[in-house]
Image 1 (cartoon, one colour):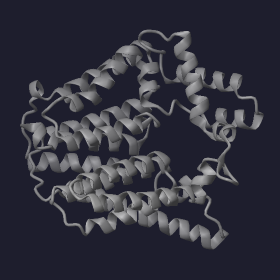
Image 2 (cartoon, helix red, strand yellow):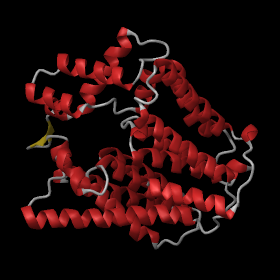
Image 3 (cartoon, helix red, strand yellow):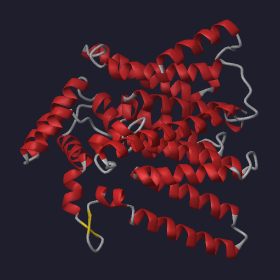
Length: 369
């Protein structure tokens, strides 16, 4: 990732195909600058700027992507950027299939129901690979709907969707089903017979999900398709994490948040130690140092209510502004859903995904009028 960014910046300087940034008419960029500057100032005041370098460096990378997008003169009539993303995701799927197959030949098992092992088999962590696939599906279906790409892309859509169901990335599967239903309902809105067949097809798709043994194990489905809710909650880290986060909110947090990530993690660890009864599970949480798994909660705790306001404003500005197309609004909807369940900006893949989606918004023709 970092060599790619450095080389991009070098070519950017060599080619000199850049223009002056129009800050006045680039509201999302201004909001993001205000958001990052606020967090940096907080870090300087609390003397945690270097201590929280892991997060601060990711925010700077995203800023670099924003700035690069708004200053670089380029035309992408053939949607090369979108194709690169889609084929990159497809390559990741193929590599993951190779790893899974190799593991199956060596150990005669495919442990995709175990979170601790699945990430070693997939090219990136399951939630991230899942959201990449869901985004890839959306881009392909969008371009098929607009008659920009041929319907041959449906074959790739089916391949990616089948793999997504196989690895059972729960959020991504739910988003993909919503995307597919919306796409085909729009395509077949005046063809009632085909709509009926469409819903029959989705009934089979849902059946495939229900009978998927990996998905059953992840939801602790027992014989008779009964879901053991207690076991599901016991094995779901977010249930414990969000319970602790809710406790912090009920107790009241400082207006500008905690002093830094170290204090936040210390409070989370204290909550894990006090609330988790099983010693093995408690030790696992303390060793793993689970963070908030929610970007909105994370920025609330690290920057307080003002940071949360700026972060929400950054995300919802494109949704409420008529200059942004429906495709852009849907893309940011995918991003928001992911931010609800993952601390996206804490990881390299997450920060790049965040930056790439906003690059898409800035280069959208309707958004730059």
